[in-house]
Each structure stands twice: as C-alpha cells, then as structure tokens.
Length: 324
Image (cartoon, rainbow, N blue to C red):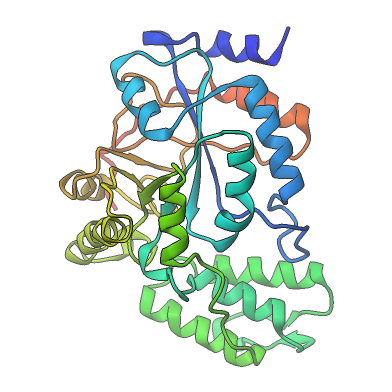
C-alpha cells in the first residue's frame, strides 16, 4: 500500500476529509550542537519530499476555508512556522519555494528587527559562554556543568523548564541573571527583520499573528492579553499592508497556555481561525478558533510517516470550558 493511499484512507476528502497542520520553529543550515533535534536544511528538505508524496499541501487560509465548507481534497495538509526566526526566511523559505510548497509563518511582532525571545536569551547565553559551570543557587538549582554540548543542552532544558511559567517580569529578571552569570551579550540577529517578513508576504507565503511578545496568555491580566493579541495583528498588517486572518496561540496548550477567554479575544480581534499545539487533525466540526496542529518528532522516515498517518484518525473536539 502506498503512503498516499494510506493517507487518503484516513482522510478521503470532502465532508469526510480532515486537515493535517504541521508546525515548525527553526531550520538550521547545518546541524546545531545545542539543539540537535531541530531540522537542518537537508533533513527538512527530506521531510518536504515525504510530505509531498503523502499529502496534498495547501495554503493554510485556503485549507481552513475548505475544511469548514467540506471541500477538502483527500489527504490535505498545510505547513506552518511559529515565532519568526531569521532562518525561516534564509533557509526554510527557499526550500519550500523550490518545491512550490505553501506555508504560513506565525510571527511574534515585537521581536522583529533585533528582538529576542526569553528562551533564546537563555539558550544563546549558554551557547556562547566560556564558563565551565553555571552557578544559580538563587533559583534552587544545582551547579550546571557546561563542559560539552550535551551538558549545555541539558542546562538549557533545565532552565527553560524551571522558568517557563514564572510571571513574565520575574522570568525576564531570571534571563538577565543567566546572561550575567554567563558573561554574554544577547544577539540581535536571531529573528527576522520587517523587510524579511514583507519579502515572505510578497513571495506568496502566509503571515499569521502570534501576539506581540509571545506571552503565556493565562499568566496575563485579561486586558493585557487582549492587547497582545490585537496589537500583534495590527503590527503585522501595518508591516505587510495585507490583512492577517490567522493566529497561533503561544505555546498553545488548552487550559495551560490559553483558555476560553483568549479564544474570544482572538475572535474579537478579527482573526478568522486560530491554532493550538494540541495533536490531531482539523475537520468540519472543529472549532475554528481552536484548531489542532501536529508534527512527528521522529527523524526516521518510516516512523515520521506512520505517525502522521496515525494522527489522521485523531479528530479532537476542543473543550473550551476549561478555565485558567
């Protein structure tokens, strides 16, 4: 049985069809020793080949519309990226364009033109430090060895897990503490420039909202969360001179990162659909403002493709009664 036939069995199209939406963050030109799980240009291009052989790849806005009106082709899928990293423009976009594959980039607007997300503030400090150990007893952590890349990768993971759900101001203080302890300055070229976002838009790629500063929405007062959602859209519309209709929740787990309040904020801000990071496929009965996305973590072709085929049978119904 071919992969395309297997995917068509799981998603025969029209009203019985479903939509697989994959999401990525970064694509490195070469293997990155600090983030060995992230795709490289070579491995991402291989994935694109697997996806083309297995699915019908659609622009995300078209895919959402056709999912809602029951006109999806068999084995429909779409590709998305989150956050707005510069390698999306430099590495991923040329590979996508060479294969004529559409994609949508969800951009945290206020990190353009030299900004840096808090998690990257941690990762880049540890990447560039010359220190052999990191001393952070004030955060209840043991000394973290930094003698090799495996140790540095473990240190990054430990700190991200420890700091992720702190109040934003407290978390930002912790990032500065780590940068000082590492003796490093934050980079200013990790995220895209406004010109690069405009270039993606001119080349036919989709641009979607992802808030201004990528906060965990459940940690914010309602008024601030609403500003983050609406202003992020306004920023991107001003940048591209185009309407921005699609949104992705930062982190994207229902009840932990967003809830029913933020769904309504997203709808009020003018978005026509919003995406989570919950696994599963979109189908005609899906809530347009709580659409699932799923990307296999496997880098082996067989497991990657089998897991995608298995995901096509996961048709979740969002429970937006969950409160923060």
